[in-house]
Length: 280
Image 1 (cartoon, rainbow, N blue to C red):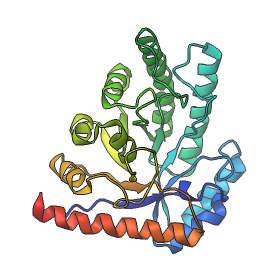
Image 2: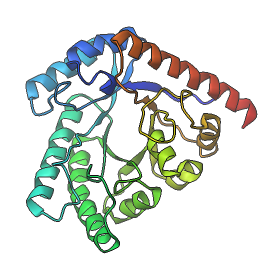
Image 3: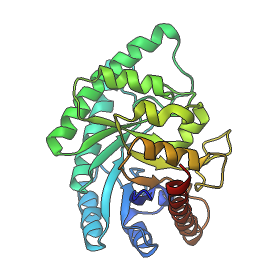
């Protein structure tokens, strides 16, 4: 059986201040987390708030595996507008500082813009170049802070929504200390799931684990959608993957209902891992 740590993104409580959400997470049996950077949850610009969250994480015996960098329309490291790119890099470096203060090992970010639509072929190359140059600066800051930068595959209608985009970008970044975080829901929607673990295997350090019904980014618990989880776990085993699985679930329902889904998802993955040890 694969012994992958299974944690929970606090994004399922993104409407709740992090100091209220952390005890719920711990009491639900999760001691490994990814910190959500949604402003109503954690304002990473507010150093006092970040330090209070770091103290609560320590006091509760929780391990901050990662922080998800902010993503919004105004954050676009691939933009042709230089001031926007520079402001985006500053935001991501500020998030890196917060991640380090929280004791995170990883900073996970969406490398492309959130605007719908992939660029035209003539615009694709310069956007990729802009993103790579911007990420060089963010990666340098992460190295200074002792954290690892991970790039997440995005939805298929966006730039970096396919494994081929991710591999190009990884090759264009100067530093070698940059890895990837595989979002299972995004990969399923892009059609990359059958091969993405193999393609990213040399760079893959963690997973965002969620399911969907094949049309939308539903962030369902694993097993509630159409993803073939046994096949995915077998792929991870073959590639000797050793990183954490972070449940990234929708914040729908009461806090108790959200936690019940998270625990059920964790048990589902554990049971499937035991099955994979026999069947793969």
